[in-house]
Length: 515
Image (cartoon, rainbow, N blue to C red):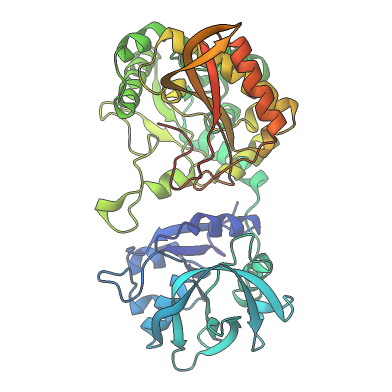
C-alpha cells in the first residue's frame, strides 16, 4: 500500500470529534494521521501531507494559554481546512476579528450558502449543519470571503481560494451535518486533488510481507490473547506471516463470562489454527483480590498479576524475541499529550506499558487502524462475527462489574445474570445495535417478597448503551417488555437477587463501565 504521498494531516486542538474526522477521511479511501497542535513544523513537514485539517477544540482563541500554531504552518504549500476552533484560530492568525457570541450555537442550525464555493458543490442552497461553539468570527481576515452564514446571521464559512485556505464553523464530520460527507470529499478530491490510496485488503498483504521480513526464521513471537477483536485480528495477521512460530498465551483469570475461556480457546485452535497456550489462574487472581473493594486497586492488582504470569510463561518459550499487541490508532493518539505532558488523556496498557525487563521487540500490526477498520479486516480474514462483532469487554473482566469485593459467590451470580442479559438481547435482535449491554452487582441488599416470604437479597443493575466509538454514549431506550423479561428471569433464575434496576445515565458525565 503506497501512502507516502496523498496523505492528510489533522492538527488536533482537543476536539471530541478529531478521531471522527480521521475516520471519515479514511472511509473516503485516503490515509491520514493526527498530530497534536504542539508538533513542530519540522515533524509536520516530514509527514509530507497533501492537505492539512485543523480540528475543533474546547478553547477560545483569547484564552490564556490558548492552543495555537505557528504562522510558519501556513507557508506549507498545501490546502488547509479549519473546522470550528480550527477556523477561528486561522482567522485570528490572519488578523480577523473573533469575539464571544451573544447567542452561542450548539446543535442543529440552518446553513445559508451566500457565495459559490467548491466546498459546497452539490450541496444545494440550504443545509442542516451541527454547531458547537461559543465564539464567532465578526469579520473575516483581509482577502478572505464569507461563503455561508447561519440562520442567526453568523459567519459559518470563509475561504481564501488563492491561498487555498478554507474554514467551517460547523462540524462536517458528524452525521448531523447532512452534507458533511460531500463537503469533506469536495475538499479532499476537488480542492486538494488527492487520489485514493487506502484499501484495507492491500493493508493486510503489506503487513504480512512486512512481518515476514522483520521476523527471522529462527525467531518466535508471543501474543497475549484475550478473546477480544483487537488481539484476535492482530494474532491472525501475524499467524498468516509466521504460522506456528507465533505462540499465543491465554490467561484465564477467573473473571471471564460463563464458559468464555474454554469456548474462546477452542475457537482459536479449531477455526484460526492458532498455537495457543492455556494458563488457568483463577485461584491466584481471586486470592489477590480478597478483601479489595477500591476499583483502582482492583485494576492494578489484576494488571500486575497478568503481567507476572505472562512473563513467566514467556520465559519458557525459546527464541521468543517479538511481542505481538493489538494496539489501535486511538490507543496511540490518547497516549500522546495534546496540551502537554500534564494532560495525557490516558496511559493505555498497550502503549509503553510493558515492564522494562521485557526484552521484546513490539509487533503492532493494527497500530494505524481504528476499531471499525479492524472489524472490516477481521471479516476479510474470515474471522466469524461471533468474535468480530463482540461487544467490548473490559480488561479487568467482571471484577469491575462487581461493585466492592470480588468473591466466588458474586462471580457466580454475575455470570448467570450476564448470560440472561446476553440471551435476551440477542433474542430481540439488539446485540449488534448496542455498543455494550451487561449487568452490574451493587453491594446493596433490599427487602423483597419471594414465595410469600420476606427476602433480603442483592441488587443488580442493567447497563445498555448506544455509541459509535465508545468515547461518548447514550443509554439505550430498550423496550419495556425486553427489560421486564430480563428482570423476571434474573430474579427467578439467579439465586440471591430480588431486585433489578436499569441505568439511564449517558457518557459523559457517567462512564460506560461502573468502575
